[in-house]
Length: 402
Length: 199
Image (cartoon, rainbow over all chains, first blue to last red; front, side, top):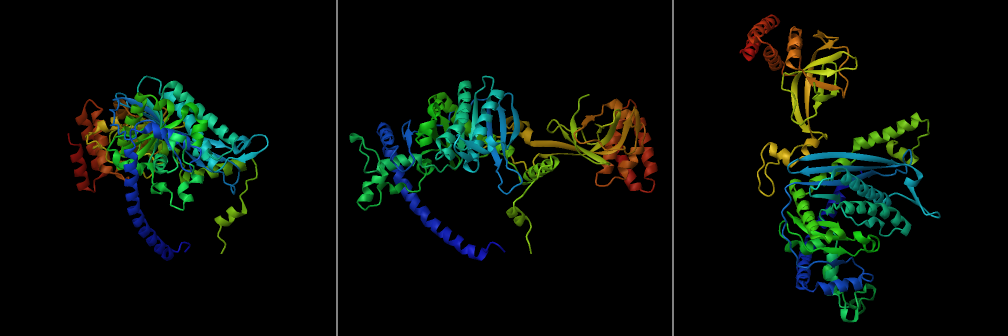
């Protein structure tokens, strides 16, 4: 037996016990943080300024308030007919021990139309990437392999490009329409990448966003059970003893005065809290919270006119995070449409947007398909009389020697 | 004539087709014709099973008649509200092979090859049903087939064939006599069958 269940069960028990105590502590801190947050409603200008001052020097993520902090907007009525497109992707990673250097990106494509003329189109489009420019990024001097995070970034880009393609193919009349992506619109995977790598991916991605903007199709992304602590970052500023707007001073975490005085930092009350924890009690079914602009570095520095904004939306027991680019956030009719349609999609999908669930089903590469793909590769290499090779490590895993 | 589906599974004695339109399979006992690779040769089958389910293996339908907002949806309304269902569900029908037509001539025994997968399937119109049912050798094929509701299928096929004719009564009597000679040592089964085709 390779997993010692007896040894494991003791650890599982310990974990549950410690989780129980954590939950009690978190609930108290959450209500304290929430009370502070709501008490600052009406002073948004002050906190916008504080966010701008602290953006570079705070050690945590921040969001700039765009609407009153205590906003709780009721669900707007959904149009009786609407259309949407959605994409989701999956990949088969480059296998270093495999027979040939390549990876596969499969993008699930969905078009749905509701109302007087219902319609649906579910497809997927695979792309086999094996050329040198698929496998490596180069600025002349350096060569960076596209794998791990960068492969995810490439997939995200393909999802965005396909979404714009779908919009151009299907969203051609004046029915209210949106384009929907799964997960965040902020390409975090590239946050720490080198400049030329960032540019390589973002240029194509933002190009796709340009195309959606030109067509006037609002883009939204849906994040189920979000864990981001960006609004919590603003509450941290509210607790920070170093913020002094009168003298233009924001939070500087590496010069924290609490820490210097040997105290716990005052913002410790926010430790481990998420935006969803903070806003949960304030929003009732179907309501959305205030719009914020994400202040993450890559968003501020590279997204330009597409600067990503977000709001939280109450759907059943969950708060979902909806992200939109600035040109959607600035158009209240489009924000209402995004709000209404995200909610309607979840209602039709029993808690999660139908379009995204279908896109995922189309994108996912299941075990048998994966095997068929490997076999197809092998057969085609043999057919072309090319040597197919597997590593010694792979062989040792496949055949257990006794 | 418009094709209604295509073969998705095929063997010497039966074939299964996927319908192009969800929930729109020909009725139980209907005669269908599947195209073959040989020009002028097509294979006849009688539908013995119709089913609708997930296209993906392992998928199961969930109830959708009551929405989260408390609205009730009934029957076709559910499909109207969820157009994606038509893409993820599939209606299939299976037919037992009862003969074939080669250059206008009809044979009531197994064809040399089963219909190829992905080839077209058509529902036969009354005049073709009439032509096919002029002979009764396929009765025997159905009576001795296993794993299908053979008596029900034979009765349905006979009712269908009678329906395609001006003189229904005469065909029913003719078919009854044929069955009597095939089932001369099984009175109970014959009686049950005759009750199923009685006008």
